[in-house]
Figure 1 (cartoon, rainbow, N blue to C red):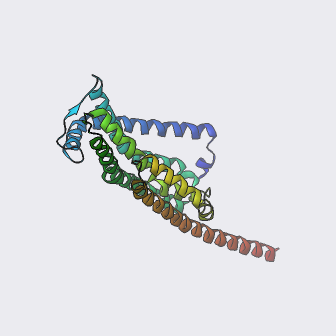
Figure 2: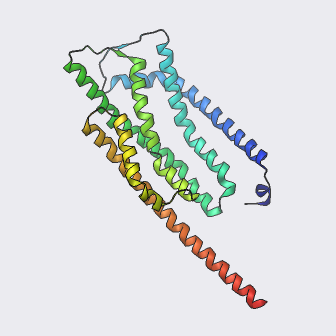
Figure 3: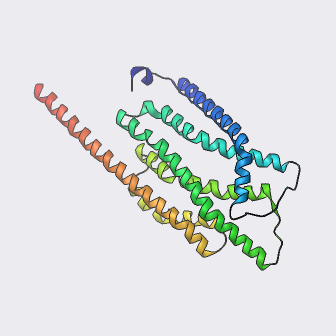
Length: 261
């Protein structure tokens, strides 16, 4: 950290934060414009594949097609803005990190984006399809004619995909909080049973109301938590070694100072 960065006032930090937030919002808007351009082919593609291929779609109000475009625009904007927002977060925190930490934490950006995409894929190909087939089977058992509203269908889909994608960010959050010494693997192991319970509750809320579906979703989430504990332990061990090296160096300097005196 250089002298100029050390001398930054709170107002200067807040001004810098505001500028970075403005840039993130601008990228989000640009991403939404891209989403508007590609919304139609993407919607038509999703309509043509399982689990809802060859089904007639309906709209129930004049605003629904516009709402559909805006939903896809927002999701596309979030996908495009996410890596840029992560980079801006890293750049804002960079002055408070040592050089080694700066390089290591920069790797969080592509890793976080990859985990978000992995969460979306898991949410769509596993959880969403499972939930849709479950609800369709209930309709068939009740001899109901399924009439799909386009806006309702995609709202149902996004309400499942986005929470799961955010849960997949858990390892990144744990790594970051461990890096700044807010969390450590000892604490994560201590609260493991409560974390498991919370993850099972989340899995139950976003899946059909049957035990198999909840287990299918809860198991990957629990594995994510254990992976987070492993990553936290790796960072924590490195921190302990660095602290020991710093203490040894400080003791050596103190001993040399006393011998000179």
